[in-house]
Length: 335
Image 1 (tube, rainbow, N blue to C red):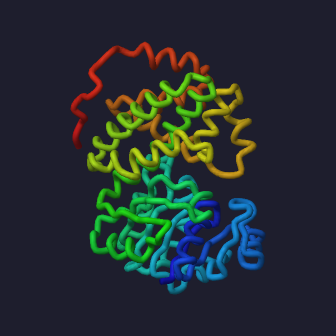
Image 2 (image 1 turned 90 degrees about the vertical axis):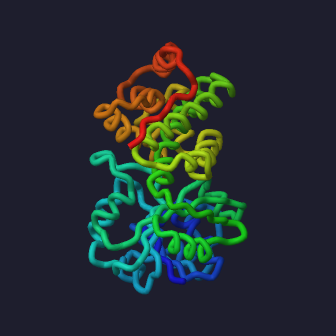
């Protein structure tokens, strides 16, 4: 199977490595010639996965036509805020029957749209799905066991791709809840920033567990109001990815929160990051969404207030803890 992966960062490269090792012909679309040269000539991607040797069947190119030629599936692994530009540039270059798989965990700030919604704007005749779940790129690239979920509305398509893309160390489960899987992947990054802030403030493990649990409730509240399936939130894309991202030191979003909790400013933290922490941008979209709805997303709002309104984390925490007492479970709004 020929697979085109649009992107050449850590996640794109890790996916490419797994699938190339299974015997697929994989091409990465990169933005920099130095990355292309390193992958094709030295079998490494030192900027994103230092120390990982890549298989010879994994190639990179700067030319979209070369990457897309003959591809049976197109995987999108670019930052969420860059997706629209990339998709617009490739409009007309992908035939309608090719399945598009978003491996992006974020939302567009300006439109509040998820990646598959953006892809459907430019490729309305292509089936669009999403790949998500608890999966640090570094561990995937090392060949450590990983389980994720592939969601397509078309069951036959999800089943076929599941069989082709799964391997003994990279297990795919399938789902038809594209919206739910996608929303879980986006929102968990914001909750991870909150968990990092909590740990940076040394609030303890009890506090982090509470944040994860109430963060899941917040994710469900939003997801169910937008038509997601309830079971998705207890699965790999929901609880699984949330726990990983809120507790694993490899999480960029957790590290952003931790450093902010330790007293660094957001510009200082972002300046030193080599890769995108999607939660920093997704929280802007969530904050805008909340302003136009009756939904309560107190953790997401608190993260926004710390990152973008300059409020001290301790003050935001005080407000969260002084909210009116209520039942743990309340009937969620339905679409």
